[in-house]
Image (cartoon, rainbow, N blue to C red):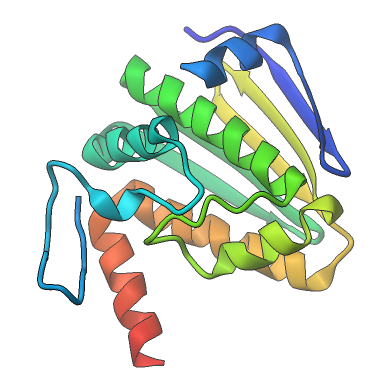
Length: 184
């Protein structure tokens, strides 16, 4: 099982245990150019400002989404989520992804993943207004995020539901969200 670690982010400063720093170091495409689907390389998971490692973590989680489960509690001022995987490699990618993205949010450093939900735009604009706590426990990856900003709280609730849909349906959920946005 994974070691217990904690991460706390306050005003963009991420305080981590050494295990987090060590851990963090380690498709479909819908193109107008007709490139279509590509589950092998998942080019839509790349981004203008994303590292190859970040894209690879996302691809691994999408390929093996069936190994993951997730619970979400909407709090009056944010969210509490518990996500786990029966696959140790996916669990490692999940923890690394969560730590990395929460760090990016705190630094307001948008990776601009091509298929990224527009819900995240607000996170990267106002990341200094989100307090995040991460624990890896026997229960799984536990993330609590809170804010005093009502728009951020609403975005947290929306994003938590989006991530849950991806955990349950994989890339199909992304396609459905993209279709909904295109129809609006």
